[in-house]
Image (cartoon, rainbow, N blue to C red; front, side):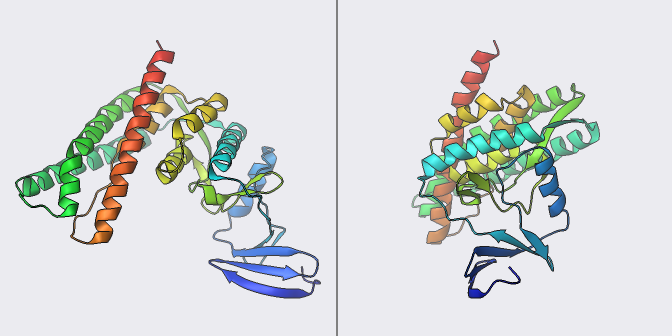
Amino acid sequence: MNRECIQKIEIRKKTKYIQTKEHEYFVKRQKHFQQEQIYQRLEERNFQHFIKPLYIYHQEEVFPYIHEKNYRNEEKAIDMMHVLSLLQNKTTFYKEISLDEMKEFYEEKKGKINYLIAYYQDLEELFFKEVFPSPTVYLLQRNLSLLFSSLFFAKETLEEWYQLISSKKYQRQVLVHHRYELSHLLEGETPLLVSLDEMTYGSPVEDFVYFMQKHCLELEMTSLYQLYQQKYPYQKEEFLLLSLLLAIPPQLKLDASYQTTVLMATAFQKMNCCREFLLKQNERHQHEHK
């Protein structure tokens, strides 16, 4: 690009768009030096569905600009399941389990669940007798059973997961994108992942949990999950971890603002989606493991 004649530069959020007479580029600031190691690792594992920078100059990554095809979200989501299963198959390795790390995770999740149970019990006591509740309080009252059933399911699942993982010697690890959503897949000649800034090693369930929580209100998640699982089936402890992470509700703050009411309504819709999804998958999982 140094010898090309720049015709246009635009700032688009956190990236720069550059057009020359010959080509188009986008430029973004490199977040950390380990990024190059991630690109190298993906290439070593023959994973090709990502955009690698043409070069890095003064901690800025220069990428070719991709003109996307006009895909519907449903079509793009199918490609995301194929790409996710491929990424995980290509980067899987088995890591020896640290019981101290597992116990620390267990204690952290157990503490969070117990805190949320106490938090919502306090809110129930505080607002249960209100005759003319605000819209926010009314929403809470209507969904308390959903909150408590989710929390007690999460508590039970955590115990089952911890008992199982404590008996294992190794666990699967993969490269995790950490922001696996529709906007981070470009539909060029092939589907290409972008925004790999936060990619690290972790559990195979993390990216699907993020995708589910981000898009469950707009996509049919059961068929997408089954498509994904055909190519990268979870082990039992991974399925339990998936169930645990999807079941834990957020800590909802109460005030009388319209924005809070809308956010709370959306949160309950997502919780219902996750609950229905887990009911179907638990039934299917139990049937397959009889």
